[in-house]
Length: 74
Image 1: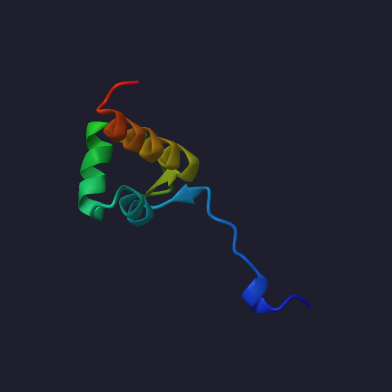
Image 2: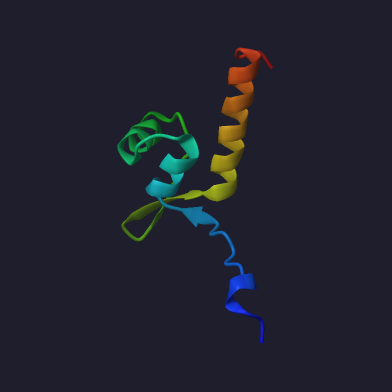
């Protein structure tokens, strides 16, 4: 049997607004505003809950960081 300390939980594919906010280094409220204005990738509904694709958010964060480094030039 594998010891519990070596078991890793897989990262979820769908993340909530708290995780989105942590990835963008902002508050959950600001991340909600960014989603409402289209500044971040669109989420999807799971029942009454809004979720985002972890991969899409990570790609957007990387693109925004690259744009900040290059001054917005491609």
